[in-house]
Each structure stands twice: as C-alpha cells, then as structure tokens.
Image (cartoon, rainbow, N blue to C red; front, side, top):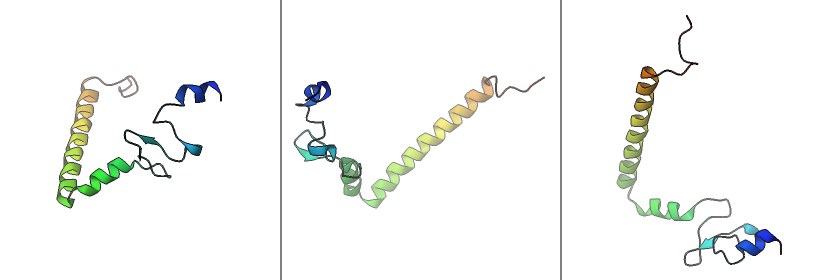
Length: 86
C-alpha cells in the first residue's frame, strides 16, 4: 500500500474495490456507476411535480436577482475592459 492508500484506508468515503462505488454514512451507495448523486435524485423524485416546479422557480428568481445585481455593479463600477475609450 502506498501513502495515499494508507491515509484513506479507513475512510468510509473512499471508493472501495476499484473506485466504482462510494459508500459512507450508513454503508449505502451514494453515487451511481456513472457518477450521479443518488441522494439528490432520490430527494427530487420524492417531491411532487408541483413541489419541484416551485423549488425550480425559486432558484430561477435567485439567479435573476444575481444577474441584476451584477448588471447594477458593472454599471456603477465598470472594469477597465468595459470602460469606453476616449
């Protein structure tokens, strides 16, 4: 075993047997073989379509607020690249 393996041998978040599956916090598989986080997938599928729609709508509102804040900041304090030449 090399130093990396020695340091992570007892770590439950370390991939076991070839690295295809990661187990931690209770020994259940967290990621699919393709790398999808199964806990997030399970959580989303437990929600009703209306709940998912509402959560996505809230996330969109937050993204739009960040975009607007960026526009306001850039307008008030343009970077040297954005400043007009003259």
